[in-house]
Length: 206
Length: 190
Image 1: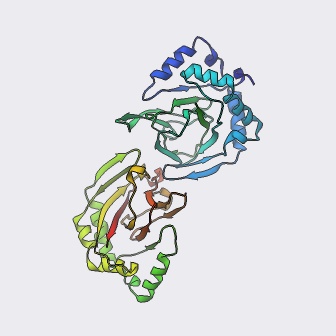
Image 2: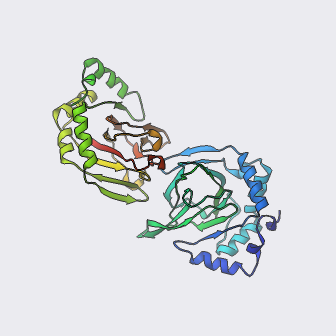
Image 3: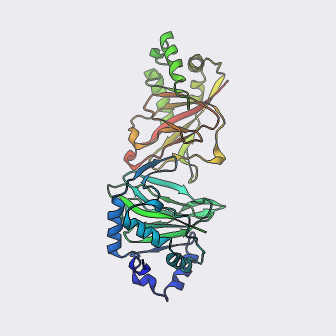
């Protein structure tokens, strides 16, 4: 499938890519980008429908409370399989390389749907697990200010998270991604409303 | 000090049996553990104590402090003898810290803050609490097994924390509103 089916035109404009890469590298508190309306509305709607057919499993620990699908590496849902195949295709990985300057591998596929409902949360952590290079999220629902579910990026001091210095409010169709590093402390703030936070996210590995 | 209901030989025998039922975390939770007068004293002291707020996003968010009044009270023979009788061990004394947690507060498991094996006690001095708001104490071992203990006012939890078993306090969610949970967490000396 062509990348153009899944990515809106502004983000495929060759003249924009170097600027986006600069923004990524210079972003504070650590390299990241938030690309609103990255997915065409039709594809966003299709993914919402597809994800709603997946089984979500409640996950709970000291660090989090949320619901997740099984790894989409083996999904039988055609829409999700097409999306997965695009994300881990040479074409899209090259595109991500252009945006980040990083070389990314087509395997492993590390992709899941996530659902945060009222009182769900993910406390501060850095995502550092062997091989993870870029963490990404495609938001499939929109939250409003005050509803929670924000992606909170922490500044750091002496190698420890200091305070939330940026909050990203989910907006359907947005792609948000960041470099996984010893500085990439982040959290998902508690959802405080009936409105659910739905996303497909995962990691690219090197 | 202790509710007379728990002081009969029959109850002590039953409590000793209950204590050993959970292989992950041998424990027992006593509701209405203290007499009303003593509980009122505990609650009054714990809820009015001046506490220090502390936040480390990777480990905890809560207010805590120590109380000489509570430490002295809980080191008196009626309490330590009761615990010793229940555990069939000679308890020399206890140490304790008061914690208050509200919305967004929590503790996390972290490699740098693991506890040594031992015996915990937790006295809940919260006036009103709904377990769905969070704040429960969860014991976990390294294999993913866990035991959740949700305490209510005037409960006394006694737990034997074995090797590789640690505990955390579950995140308190927005439904708690402005209410806070106050617990006295301590350990036993033998």
